[in-house]
Figure (cartoon, rainbow, N blue to C red):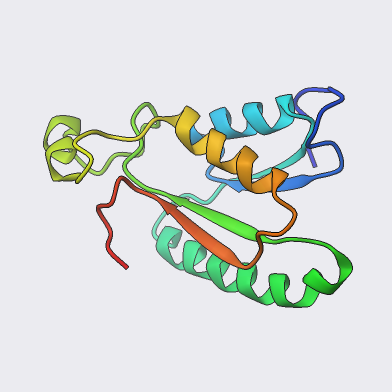
Amino acid sequence: MTRLVETDSTLSGRVSLITGASGGIGQALARRLAGEGAAVALGGVVGPHYAASKAGLHGLTHFLAARLAPSGVTVNALAPALVAETGMLPGDPRQLREQVPVGRLGRPAEVADLAVAILRNPYLTNQVISVDGGIYPR
């Protein structure tokens, strides 16, 4: 586990696992959560198994949430997509922006803000929350 910033804050005692932290969004999220006092564990998933690893994380989220909730531990996941400044866009940002219902790409700070809100909420558990501007309907 890596602690990026030592602070006394509202997220003290919370732990966050961040995959894909080699890019902009992962680094921004790790810095934000650590700055709020959370311990941050970083991991990277690169290559052809990316989609399978994310599906595995969704399954793990649901498995752990059901088992840890009685102990007061909440487990949630964020699923960001089409976030600018990450180096992880699957094409031309101008063309991608036109496809997103909100009319723009996301920002790393927006994903970090939601992560902090989730960690601050002790009632929210067993959720995979998409942060994608509405592009992937459920």
